[in-house]
Amino acid sequence: MIHLYQKITHLRVLRHFFSSPNERFYLREMARLLEMSPMTLKRSLDALLGDDLIVREVIKNQILYRANVDNQAFRFAKIAYNLSWLEKNSVVESLVENVPGTSSIVFYGSHAKGENDRHSDLDLLIISTAKAVETSDIEKKLGVDVNVMNFSRASWTKQAKNNRAFYLDIITEGIVLYGTRPVVE
Image (cartoon, rainbow, N blue to C red):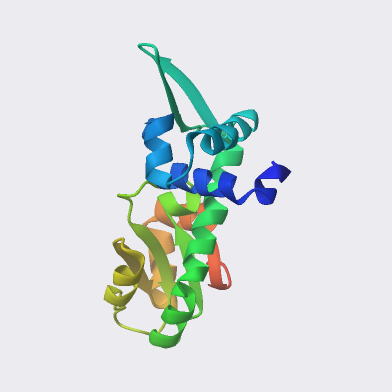
């Protein structure tokens, strides 16, 4: 997997599979979409196949490529990509600036698990003193729907008792972007 960091073209191809993990692509179709020569693309696809990050399928004499969503390395790479996407777009900084009394921001849901596609929304949990969180600027910047669950510390404690499954999902699967993990004792 080290060679991925050595080749920008490999990362461009991998990014394409991150945004469309459930779709299959022909070599020439992908070359056109990515504006690459088919030979350059083929070398990148072979490298990604070698790392088991993508799968090659033959359907009716046609060779198709798709993301290997069952591969843990693919999911971890996609999570890292999602986190860098949030960082690049200053999502956390924007929320901390605009939501008073923010003590925690937790990234959860399909994006945090590396299972998102281009139609997935972005799920964030915020522990703050604010009554409401405005997300239209972030949605506009990212081009995805943003689902924010905003709780005060007291209401989060109540939520932890009343909706244990949601609480445990946040605590075990969520990625802390700001502050500390909102564990209720």
